[in-house]
Image 1: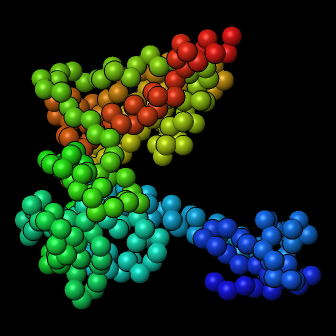
Image 2 (image 1 turned 90 degrees about the horizontal axis):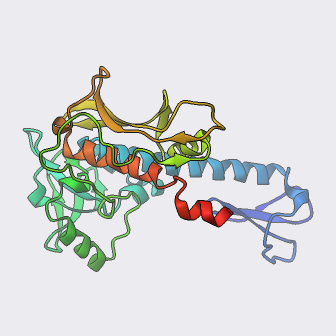
Image 3 (image 1 turned 120 degrees about the horizontal axis):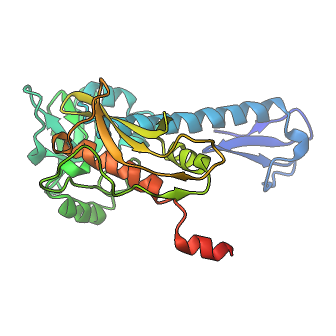
Length: 291
């Protein structure tokens, strides 16, 4: 974007990413926009554009993350349509994708790092041998890392390629369901103490989770089945102390699932949510430090 003249003083402004820059009449770049230009029409317009760009970038990342977490096949035609958009490309580029066959099964042996999406030539990837190839399938899967058998090797290969994913995939921490799990609840993240309930709920919301009925909730799809992970954070007064409770999974009708029926992606994402919220609890060292 070029420099735009303001209505006063010979100042010019432009947008660098999502930041408004300003130059004076002599062409010298200023550290910040002068207060007298705060309500200038061009400055206001650029700030509104910056806000929209930030919101758009966030929405692209959130949608891509939803495809990953919910294991939803994505049409290559859709990827090709959004690829020219810099925000979409930043979210999608270098994610591991796998072609989906006519039977709906992803061929993980033909997976690779997404580098291009074209309406005529399809999706371009760098495969696991380091070769640039095209995917002929009409849809691809952005697999959750818990589904990748050679995750450690893929991480090493990604480092060699200099991959920097805009949406956390390969280096997303994963949790695997222990063998012979029984019951309906996980108590690993229970009894985490927060000085105020609102500290726990604010942490959950800041991490991208919804809070409903005293629980942090993560909507999921596993094997085409809708479900949710729910982690108790408390439902007392917002300014009162709160203790976290169990983590559980429920189907779309609200029925609790036996732990042995929770799939790998739902398990990993549910435990990830609980671990992230629990990490914000008050621990003994924190209390001593305030005395």
